Image 1 (tube, one colour):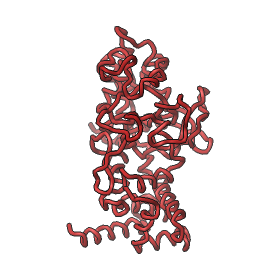
Image 2 (cartoon, rainbow, N blue to C red):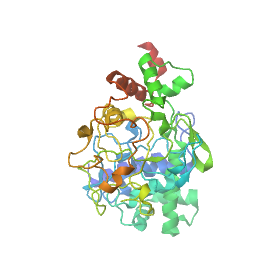
Image 3 (tube, rainbow, N blue to C red):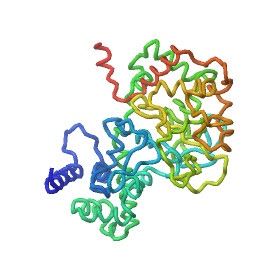
Image 4 (cartoon, rainbow, N blue to C red):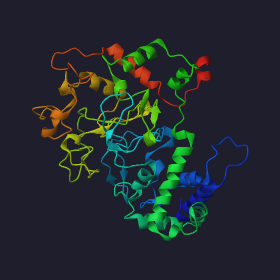
Length: 403
């Protein structure tokens, strides 16, 4: 397709996204700001390459997470710059509290670093997170805010929409226009139920509209068992901290940060970070100096986890079963997970002086060591994976009954 035809197609898509939904259509009744945000979300013309949009990495067909199996995605002006972390899903972000080093947990457990957006919580809101890729060198790669805003200014449909929604002078200030872009993108993510559908089999089960199989029920029991798998201690299905000091429910994360000794992925490099990803201490985040925070990453939501192709912040594992087995055998068979030259402690994703901070006290890590017996056997691992598969959105109870 030539440039003229690409421009025509892009203009038609933009006009359609900005248009108000027709009466009677089964589509979400998005506000004008959310419709503008949707147009921005799918527009590759906002990137330096002209070929990358928010949806390029946050694929709506895969629950707004990458559909490919790459540990990190590529961006930049020529789409040849690798990222430094696995791209997370954008679903179920609307309940996240703001970052705090002393975030309180409604379940009464210890307070600690928690909240925010991204693996290191550095973004305070969906709006801030949404525009950051526009000016990140290995993502959409505009050199600065002004360059991103200039792409808006070149499109008459955008200019008219921004002025109608945010005021006639919104584009007179680069900072104000850039913030308005974030506001629109956040409105889309807050308002469109595709970002938080609560339509998994588990959700139907909690509403009394579906039954778990015996295997799924066994897996759920293991998930919640504090003396066994203990998944729910971080990936809570109950009450957790929420936005604006409220509580959240059924997010399958408590939004807190943990150091579980994720294995290194040596295909991912961290410029100016000593070859390690330090989580709360960098390379992306630079405002925290407490060494005890280094190596901590946010516990991600487990909703739609079975549709992921790579796992953890560095994409080091590639199957959900491997993830479960990592948790229950990490210190029993470390040679399976870590490079042999990582001594004296095996946790090769961190510099040696930080490896003593890896969690070895909480289940399922407590009691692990050479010759220990895994807390779950192979059948129980299979059961737990089966339960995790019930967290995938798009379940159709009618179709299930017809089988």
